[in-house]
Image (cartoon, rainbow, N blue to C red; front, side, top):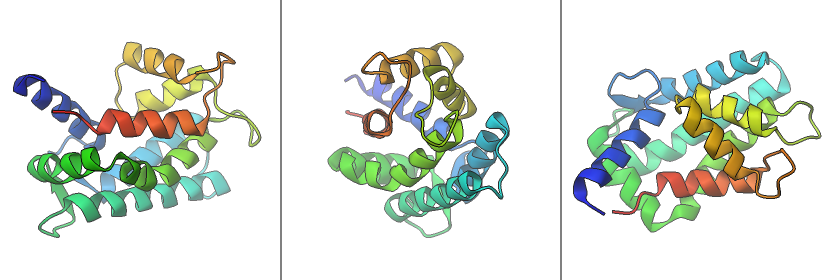
Length: 170
């Protein structure tokens, strides 16, 4: 892949995590994403689903900081993201799925119309929009995640796709 294309893709992935756009990824980006997702779906923070989402966000932050925050300042710079997270995750995509799974599981539960169902393609696109994915890309991605064509998106497809998206090949 051409270096400029690689850099563009890395910048897009970094921006997905840098929810507040301040140039670093930190705990507040993860908790802010959880708060925005709860607001989008009208779920309270004190509900079981809300608590699970915040716990998943914290676990995701801890996992990401553990592999990328090289100087221990509780912020991941773009440089740390590129040299730490991206390279380590590319070498071990299963590790990324492992640290993301609690958050993704909880996010899908928030988006699901009821506790015993998977979220719809439309609701999955809404989740992606909360994370600043452009609308058309969100719709296309959510549709692609419905691998059996039943109009719903299951966790294994989401975790796998999320890991593939963030493990950027050079």
